[in-house]
Image 1 (tube, rainbow, N blue to C red):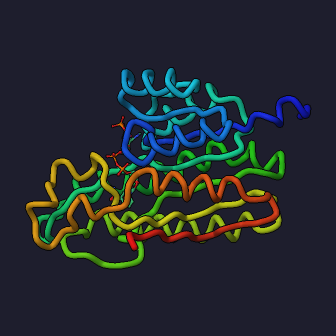
Image 2: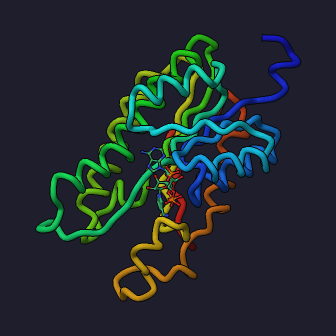
Length: 234
Ligand SMILES: NC(=O)c1ccc[n+]([C@@H]2O[C@H](COP(=O)([O-])OP(=O)(O)OC[C@H]3O[C@@H](n4cnc5c(N)ncnc54)[C@H](OP(=O)(O)O)[C@@H]3O)[C@@H](O)[C@H]2O)c1
């Protein structure tokens, strides 16, 4: 790769039509990355791509054929992948049916695996790159009514830890970023301010807090790895 093409690093951010992904996409673009933004809502994606001078890649992370299409659209190799696409919902164990479990596993686990599998070979070929998996505090702590979500985020952590082992010595790095609650549209259907056992939105992390953490990890020397980063409201 020439010095000219090295100068502009490339990143793919999934979930870029959402709170965290959008903030990450904007912040990486500000840091000089050429950003590919992923999501399913095409109009929102196009708007964001235009604003950040990036490229919209509309695809469903849970669908292998669409992920394969995205890989063909994005020219390998990427420097950074941020797996931020995800869903959330609350239900007691007695109300957690197979459909809810599947919905969470497909978006939060299968999606990250699909995207990583599609783009990792390009990174391995260059011996560099960074995969940031957005986990959650619910991926290491249990909260009531989080059965499906927590199962998917604990599973993501399992996937991530295997990934770390396989990446050892390859030059490719991976980081599991586990934020506490963040004030994003993911909470809109729940209205946490009306539920005493949930954090108030005003007391949650901001999407920019997570974006800064991503920028920190992505800005480190390629000789430094941050396998796990938990961020919480102080
Ligand atoms: N907010 C929190 O409190 C919090 C805390 C810890 C971790 N997280 C994690 O952070 C990530 C982002 O969450 P957020 O709070 O930013 O949520 P959000 O505002 O609801 O955004 C979710 C994003 O994921 C995308 N998405 C969902 N399913 C998808 C699929 N199958 N294929 C492609 N894109 C998909 C949505 O895009 P489209 O609708 O356009 O497809 C949207 O861009 C999630 O993994 C979440 O679990 C959130």
